[in-house]
Length: 433
Image (cartoon, rainbow, N blue to C red):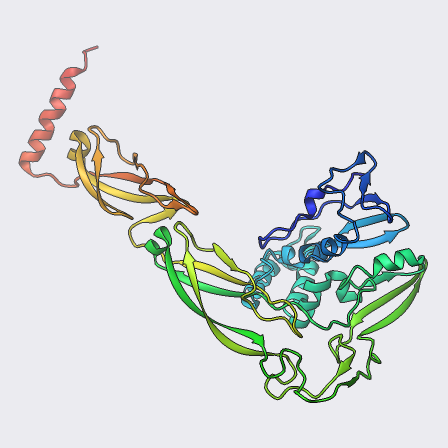
């Protein structure tokens, strides 16, 4: 069994989820901060991955909760790959409902059993439908984002181990493995803002001010959701525990399922709701944000503003804001990555004799030298007349000009006479057989 590569678990800032591979087993000593494999000790930079200080951070980071199921078995931690609903639909984790619906419809038309007769199409269609059912429902999606696929099923918690394992399980907060739900807060939602740019604004960059609407902490109740001065009382649903637990007997022992109490949001107590936020703890407000658009961005590129999304519930950490760029097309110049494409028309005489043409570029009108004997559809390069590379203003693409030679459909008597003379001269050059 292959050892688990430490690099798989390095958190990243991108939107795409890491693709999980086959499951692997890593042995560890509960009383030591060293992690080892069958081949020996790992490097020191990875050796504290399961130490008491880092295990909680490592296992509760959002990308890993979505992709891996953790199961303790004596002195081994088994990591099993799970489906990622965002990857199933081929969307980013910050995708909005319209994007989710569009992706679902497109895939459903492709893999519907009535249309696609491939052996795996039916199962693929079921997976797509299941992913859409979860991600299109705000409540289910929130649970999935926090606890992964197991959270939707109740989050299995392995029982029957000694106290040392129970202690370790209690460190796996928020994963349905004996975690403490009494905090009651949750991370704020990420927001997406579509910013439209003109062609040259995207090429050279620009500063733009945008205004967003987001949920912020209620100033009246200070994000608690409770009416100021009101008294709290024990939640009757969970009896003050903040979570609901059920036990299921299986061939492997008793499995406990734990979920946050829906009536008190895991707080274990309830109170009179705040009049301003109606117990939500958050109110909608607008905010202006300055966006420094770097030179060279294109449609689909995005900038992440940390902690500028919705505030978390009950004082939880805020989400992020993603500004997604949408670039308007230019009627003359076409963009291909960092290069600019343009078609230049020249007469057949200019193509034969050569000339200098004025052509448009992103920098304005520039001279383009047409060499003598230029052939139709030849592409000429104007170096460093293209789009700057993002965060590398000194490096630019090129402008590629396709030469389109125009042949006249009609000639006057004099033009025809001159062309015939050229034909006779050309024939005279050919040696007789």
